[in-house]
Structures are given as structure tokens and as C-alpha cells.
Amino acid sequence: MRKSNSQFQTSYISEAGTFKTNHDYFAYVESDDFACWIAASGLDASTHQKSAEIAVHSIFDDLMASQVLSRRNLKKYLLKAHKQLLHNKEKKTNLKASLIMVVTDYSRIIWATAGNARFYHFRKGRFNFRSKDQSIAQMLFAAEQLRDEEIASHEERSNLTSYLGKETGFQPQVSRVYDLQDDDVLLLATVGSWENSTPQEISHCLKESAKPEEFVDNLEEMILRKQ
Image 1: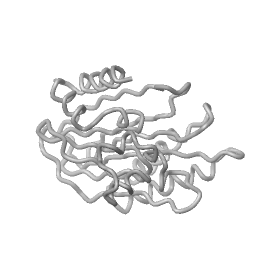
Image 2: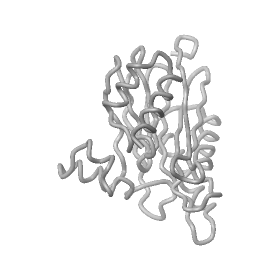
Image 3: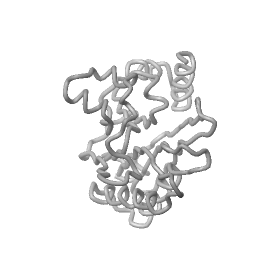
Image 4: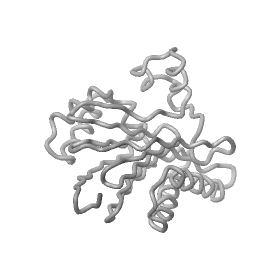
């Protein structure tokens, strides 16, 4: 399927939140044969580091050069972005980032994650599934020591087992191919947003929204009210 037979509507919002500097970075592209969305969150202590931006640009450079979508290629792109962060690290401080990317040929999607940036899928207005975090909290949930809804407030939610820029043991997660249906909603979220919202609250914002712009605005308002 080609872009001429499909239509995606994209909207986003990114704020610094409680930090002095916004360390998140979002970008997307739609070509005739594929589309890609990436959201990344820098795990940097310094205000002038741009780990998220470096990682996203690295992946898009590779993606646009090859324009071949496969699970193998996505993993390769993530590994290259990871190596670039290691190569560009500053003295005494590593460059680190969490990242979620979704690619599609306009009929199917594949998503890839590193760290605890999340992908949420909604179908017919209802929450369908989310990606898995690479965190100690996610491991506790897998071991049935924690409920899914408790991850967002658990102290180990940002204690990551893998992320871009990790010195050793970096292992990105790449999904299987998943078929799209008309009116599916795809949400890419960094930890600053998902730790302050439940799938049920996100679903409510979605039901109250007629357009993507309203959806992200409603999400922001809901999160700000809770804070």
C-alpha cells in the first residue's frame, strides 16, 4: 500500500515539564512508501547535551538512505545510533537516551524501543496494548510482583536495564509486524507523560477529541490538572 491510499494525521506536544531544559525530541517523515515517527527522551544531567536529537537524526539518516523497512534494519539503525552516542560522549558524562520509533508501509507497523519511552495502540477508541519498558519496574511486573498500573509511580520505573548510550549490554526491542486498521490511533510517549497518565485516562482524552491536535491538548490539560 502507498501513501496515496492512506492518510495519517500527526500532532505532538513537547514541554520541559519540571526540568529547566526540554530533553525530549520528536520527528516524523511520510514518504510515498513508508512513514516513521520517533520520540526520544535524553537522560542527560547537563542542560546543553542533546542525546535525544543526536539519536533521532542518526536513525532518520539511515532510514532515508535505505528506505527499506524490516525488523533487522530497525535494530541496525538503533545500534548505530547507540554507537554514535558512545562516540560523541562528553568528558566524564555519557550521552544517554530512551527512544520509541514506529514505522509503517501504510498497512502494517513495526515499533522499536530502547529504555522506557512507550508506544500505545488504540483501536475503535479503546486501549489495545502498549510496548514494554526496559526497566526494573517492568521486570517486577513480568515476575507478577507489581501490577501494571503501579509501574507509573514505582521508584524503579526509570531504573533502566537498557538504553541508548549504555556502556555495555545494550539490547533494543523490535516488535513483530502488526496489521493496521482504519482509525487506529498510535501514541508515542516519553516517561514524563506516561508516568502521569493511565491508559484509561488517555482513552478518555481520545474519546473527547475529534482531531489529533485536540487529543494531545486534552492529554496535556489532564496531566497539568493532576500536577
